Length: 493
Image (cartoon, rainbow, N blue to C red):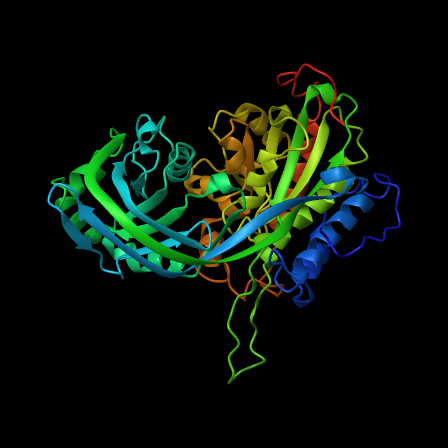
């Protein structure tokens, strides 16, 4: 649980917060959250304690009420980090009785538990179509890249979950592009963090290079390229192989936290809005150099995403005094950088029925642009109330970027978790409409020690975006401007 206690002197919300959000308002929070004192805001560290305490304190001062577990500000998110330490696997061609040894640099494995030791596991290939009922007790080889035309088909993560839920003993992802194999292998070797729910992981997981996959299926009289090419139409293909595997994995389990606050609406039956952003970053992200012990090692995450959290704090101040009809929830998620994990934990255990959320707005990486007019709307065209977003943009003098270039980020931000559940979710920011500055950030300070508070921090567009989110909150929290689909049943507390 959170070790840092919150000591708060309450102000009257609304009265002192009617003015527009300024660059200085945002900078004040960014300077705190991206300071070395917060140690890069890594989940499960002392930096997390300081971060979530700061957010909860600021939201309380803004007039929000706690909406986390047991009346607190916090919702625990159990996490587990898995790092492979040792593995050995061999395959048997059952019709020929021939054992196939794997090149150990072309396959890498980890276990769900500390060790995995099984023999004679049937091996199958899975595509992205049809039933997965035939995988119980089997080791599945699944292309990491979903079909290009994937309308109506699951993405890799959801296909993998389908296989696990149907009883697959293991899932090994096939890396289709051999030139990308070293990168994938290095990433896997460093370990990965996931939600500590047993149903999210197969007992055995791993990666295999395409060259090794081709050699493997050749022994079972299948064509690797053909299987990959037809993955959109293939369900399960028996390969006539079985596997013996011994795998050992280092586990580190810990609990992180989402922060959840709420502005109570006058008519909760009309549903709720959600404003969200991730608080986490990478902590100490460089190994200490003994020759330069004073060299900066902290990834402070000023733009990504202290800037988004600053927007949430300042918009909460403005909206809390409005007496909105709909409830307005505020969510600061953990472990976004580890795979949108805090957001996934939230949708798995929301404070109200998930479908009561009419709309979600995600604030992430906003402090890049000096343009207070042009905005990218990530999520536009995803069956949400696009026309209403356009109404608010017109009223506020904001021009929507119509290039669609920012759409490549739709699956890389927390809002995507809600889109998967058919809940309209948008990430609206001037930063992603400024392609030149965005590209410079991605190729430079992004996920690096140089993403910190300095003279290059640009807050003109961020302030305009923050005020635009206040306008969005006022428009969508009112049934007069956005009737939406009224949810029946009693109000949620």
